[in-house]
Image 1 (cartoon, rainbow, N blue to C red):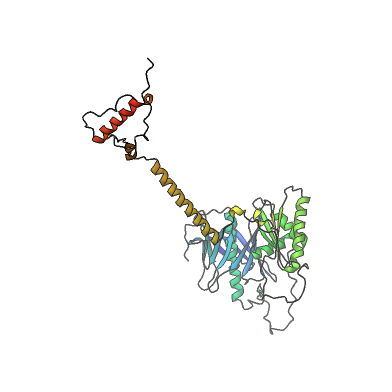
Image 2: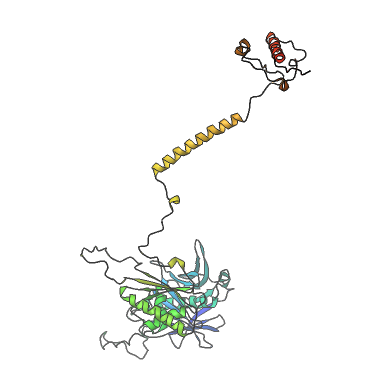
Length: 453
């Protein structure tokens, strides 16, 4: 791929004195980085500062052609895992802080799904070989993202690119798969006459890391940051010290310690106690909340049905164990007692049956109908019939009263004004009204009190 001449460019310059050393120089010839291949049975490559000779980053792998490589930065320490994710095409991926990056042949991209990736580095290499001659870091694209340690990201990008060069050298060498570092023949050394002229030298024992560094490497290869998987390799003291060191970061609120298999369940409990003991010995007063879960992972293989007539009360150790150590309380992980019945809702809140629901609906309809009738009756009584004020109702005695005058009793005189009832002006009295008035006058004279004079 063509490079931009206006950008800062690093030229890959192999050393003429030592084939294991490669310098990254600017166009003026000033070295900025120095790569050195460490010979040995395993693959190891180191990147230095050529002026101060300070170690910047180290790449480790079982061989140069391994599909997983561990990159370890120095000052400050950090671990990055470089994986080959392409099956047919050339793709190597790694994670820096919260961003995912991917090397694709001559270009390195920062992935941002579902948006298109952003180009952050570009190289120039001859056709058919993974041997770059120059590389450019596109700082203007990196500034678009929230990256705290850009220098560390630049070192990871360059170290990954240089490890691809070693991968290419071993892959295309005649002894590519037999050894990680091809042997260099001098011009004065004669070629061997027979492939088995001398016995093969014994390889030195494989160097192994120990202590917390080995535990950190094992967890980094698993891609775990706040999870610690306890396995055979590593002592209880090393695991406990590693867990205690994780809590030194203020951003680490909790860690999870889990067993790799059923044989490591007792070791998980020992690691938890060791981590708490180290914190107590260091004088840290903050108490850790502990939450234990067991048999949370499904068993592997076919399910077996036990037909033996054995008691279920016999204790059986759990197949897997997970312990959460947290600086803050986590109510969702609180244990729940087995066999405790759930509180039943009160009778008022119990859900009625269908029959009860139908009966309640019928009763409700009856009450509504009775209430509707009562409201209708009250409304009828509250509105009396209207009286026509232009007409006066006729208060006439019944026919029985007219035919039997003795039954009819007129009111006393002191309760009734003397004289006939007033007649409305302008209206002629009917014959019945005149007759009623005459009878009323007779009874008035009969019940008039006598005078004493």
